[in-house]
Length: 253
Image 1 (tube, helix red, strand yellow):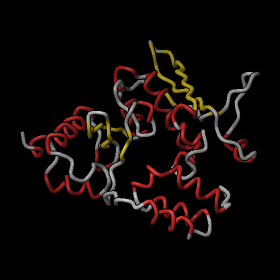
Image 2 (image 1 turned 60 degrees about the vertical axis):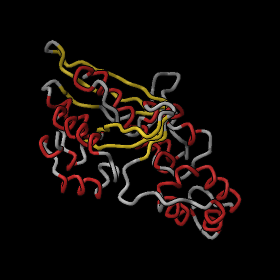
Image 3 (image 1 turned 90 degrees about the vertical axis):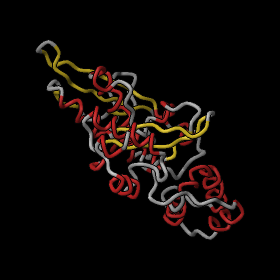
């Protein structure tokens, strides 16, 4: 079966690869599967509602279809039963109250958990479906201090909120959203290292050269820019943190 027959032409495949929606060099059969998944779910890769990632597993390179959080919510809305979503809350206290992201940021504290409630119409009644996720389960490297430069480390509230919204949506709309994941839900890929689709392929890294480049950084912004310059740097997040500590560069400098 040709890919063009199910809605994605060779020219469009190249466009999607350049836009980072599918990994460059994805085998044609996998692109066919991805295109069919787009059709079945009614989501557009050109709007980045759905995309493809590659990851290393014990059995070699695997591919997985990922839906953006907006894509999940759009599918829920199409059911006609979606009735809203509450603002995320963090770190449930012993008295049953929650903290806000503003409170935690002011105190320079990280989120421990995030809770989101999605509302859906069931039998004519607006019903709540609440999900709570733990930051340490989704981003253990950040929680243990081994990663200070990924998105989860620099935007922890945004990232864990996406996971909580996704979980709540899938509880409320289990039939429609079962089996779909967002990339932030890395716990869904056990024993796998996600490789997000990149416009530029990863460049092989020489560790000694990398250490020299890190040592030349004068502040956190330079470190973050260096970290983001090559997808393979994700593998060496712990080294970035170690070297930053040696340079005495603080997280907010």
